[in-house]
Length: 446
Image 1: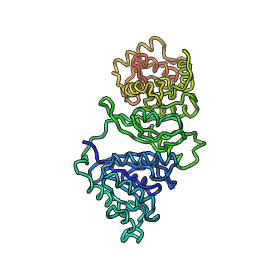
Image 2: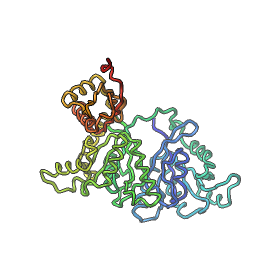
Image 3: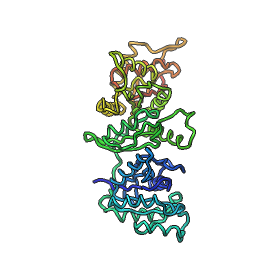
Image 4: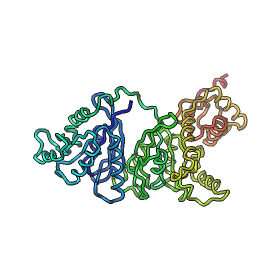
């Protein structure tokens, strides 16, 4: 049974994202006084009176604008309207009833969907101001006075929404999703949104060659071969020195948060530009957070090639991202769909490796062979003894190494042990963590 879906629409800067965040219970959409901040559809799971539903925030609708971005935002809102079971039309009492409000209302009425009219910024209880009553002229029934900032009237609004949706569409007591969360990150204009659209087969997010088009991290659920995924398209991460405006700062934080909360991280690199300093920083953040990662070299169709092109590019990536040699590279084109299937195979594979658990006995067989090949280091006559190793956790695979003296464990020897473990068990696409602990050498006692 599918969830009920509610879309919040209206012209720009009437408080749609503030209401969205208030209902969703967290700051999911970026909220700013600049019109047009929310450009794509943003989804969240919301709950009212123990019933769950899907909430959609949309970019502001300017029905008669020819601006490229505004036209794309209007298209996104239209798709949200098409999918919604109920639509909340947001207006603003401070602005009064505008021509744009009337145009949006007319567009919504053509959809045939149930509509709840919300008049925002009525910031006090009691009788609404006189300007409130002119919204009856939209012909959408009784308006609901709300303050999305202060939460006034939001409960009444939700009651009106529920009254217009068939009860069977509200799913109760849903189990937490087991969908695989895949964050698509990279610098601006690397082709992340185009990649999402190619995977989904629809214009789910706005695609533009204007760097910085996607400002929010956008979750999209879908199913492939019976398996559920959530794709998170993020705002391009810019160099810190270029993040001057508050909106850009929020976008970078949202991108980092998407990495924090994902299962698999796809780092999209522009093949025409090669690995940049910013690509390295993004990859470094994913590495530090212990995320399963894939390096997707996009726009590969635009590169002139000879027999050595791919090898040379791979070598450059390995040189620039030497800390992430475990991450597989896949050469793709979001435009033509080249190797997109291969990318999906890798998503499943690296997640499997990221969650791998190795039995202690097998791990210590590898440890024993490794120490026979290369003796542990010594210092000032004291030699490192490694008693045994066990896996403490997954995501990423984390191993506890018990030794006689932690200070004798050189970083280079841990790297050697990591290479030996990878040679046997693979662990492709995932970093490995080691925790070195001391324990008493019982065999040394007299």
